[in-house]
Image (cartoon, rainbow, N blue to C red; front, side):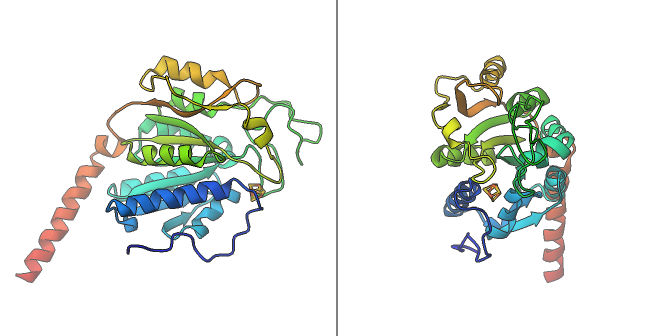
Length: 283
Ligand code: SF4
């Protein structure tokens, strides 16, 4: 199927000004570009979890799988292992992947499974009206913490570097051109790609005034240097008033999980087998 309308007719219930729109339209632009370059979108699968972000499964007209809370990444991993020829994109929330699904995120990075994980990191549980998540800043006041949180946030970039992710980047929902570049890079990267997206939650964490003066794009950074990536990751700890680096922190090339386990080879062999069966039936 080519030239399809990529935004569905499903009624969109995201709040006006929600950063999920930027991520949705970025993905639409990336998919259009892939299609223009000859890639069949029938070979692309998007998996989402539970949360406001997850509705993207209804709003993009490609193969999607609306999974359950915290289990986005194992579903994506299973799809990739079932058919290594597919491009698997995983849209997940910060509550979804840094709380309940944290172990899956770490193990996916450790395994170097060839999927692209895009975290809609709005730093709040928006769907359930404003509870704190693992990336909410210290003192965040929400429904479950009226006096403010007493916990420091986790730093997902540092966490993913320590877990062995082979592509680590950070985007921002108000910088769509950069976000598109990062998503394209992530999809092209062979191995586990992780993109943390600082996403505005217009209703429960409208942080644009905080982010806008602090964000800058990495330029003279050596993305193959692990120590330098760690140092850049620590520059802003998701809590301080430091500048916030956007872009690719780290990338390296390693064999993927399906290559190491022989799944890719098996799949190719299966395919050859079935083509041969078809040929034999015809003769
Ligand atoms: Fe977006 Fe926040 Fe509204 Fe959810 S609650 S749709 S994240 S603005």
